[in-house]
Length: 622
Image (cartoon, rainbow, N blue to C red; front, top):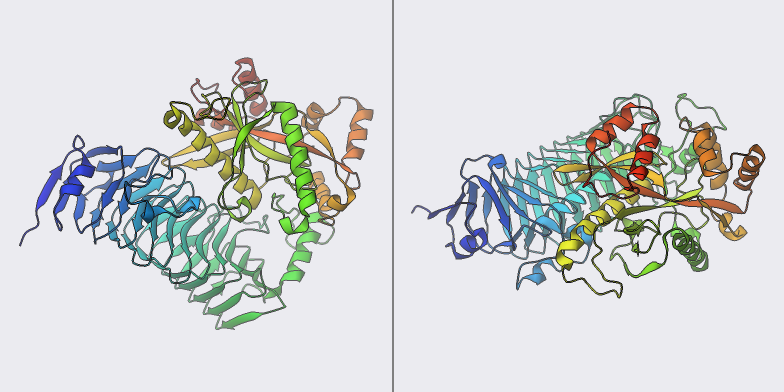
């Protein structure tokens, strides 16, 4: 018996067509863009495909929300692109229970829920701020075959709450937190014959007893981690962990790891590792590692770093770069190389990355509150009174969640500033760059703010909130980048994913940094970190005396006094705010190609009264 075939054009209401279509029907989409004003909900077995069979010819998009919900049946989708320019907490009418999870990262362009069992063949999906595909629920199952996840704000594919899935012959790249993520006991995702690359955090991420099985895959760690296992289970067979960095020197000693184990287990069989710093880093005593027939190239720093308190390691028939190394010994070596006090065996490991990450456990509630109050006082000094409302993230920023967000709508610059309060450590020693001991990040817009002065939503809230949702996502991504991976400084530029496109920014100081008096208990909470950081700063090739003099005094005697004040022994630390300013691509290219162009650009922006805002409704300066 032949299936009923339904031909649909972009002018038709696709949601209504699907709702009325009989079970087992074939829905054929004519070329074009299908822009939805509500989610496409599928609750039965159908076959939906592009008429041409080419994914570039058919796009289904929904602004500011999840595009497709599969809640029942066994539908198949072939040759279709699903694109969410941004994402919100929207869910289909009468089916909110299928998307009730609060965690930000689990919202996605395509969501399989409850009893849905969906297959995607030669499809493409991306979301500006969140993930591309997700499956959640005991009976939910997702299959991806020959699919492409090119760019997402938060992650590629998420499976949790006992859902399962199969990913094969796919390309997943340039994702936010991870390429694939599996959470909770009973959840399982199998990935086969696929390439996973350039995630901002870790390509493979099983956690909370989730099981991730990987076979015959290429995992490109870039400058981060091939896998981050947080109390989860990882099984990898016949796969390669590599980095595509061109440089041969091993500069960054705290990234480019094959596998990072945090209270989890990893089993690696018939795998290879090359152009990495470390093969496996067992960061916690309860980590478990089993390796069989694993080959590592000789250029790696070491093969395995383990915690001596509980060395649960089984290694057989492996070719290791170096013998396994105790974690304490490795960390001591990092300190020596970072402070340049000891011999550098490679001649290239002089500096540790000055990332922001610090542990809340090192500080008391009183110390953290004091730092919070000092930051707030400084923000109000340079930006005016803080807005009455703020956003508190459901998932802590320190665990990979979004920032708690604070608004300033009464600054002398005009517009609205979005600002973080979670980057700078309570002793104000990180993150830092030359001349500034610690800083927070901000981003600003002159677009209408979506609340009035009394804290009530404006009548056109749904329209005016969208630019700020994007800025919130950008600020969070940049903060996580600084927190986990790499320092930034004044005049640096950065590229961040935005669905199909990339956003470009330059950093500048909003105002002169404030000298913060740090009490001795807080100053000593992290031991010699400040001393080590000062040693690192002295040797950085990017030091600019001119920049320092711009921030402080032109007088030699006053400058020497400031240097004395900022020494590791001092009770005062400089604290400032780096603002992110959006760039056109031509401006980014010009700045990177011409020395000193960043200062010229920022000066011209000020002359045009467009500094320090990220609204790009302006012609490029370069």
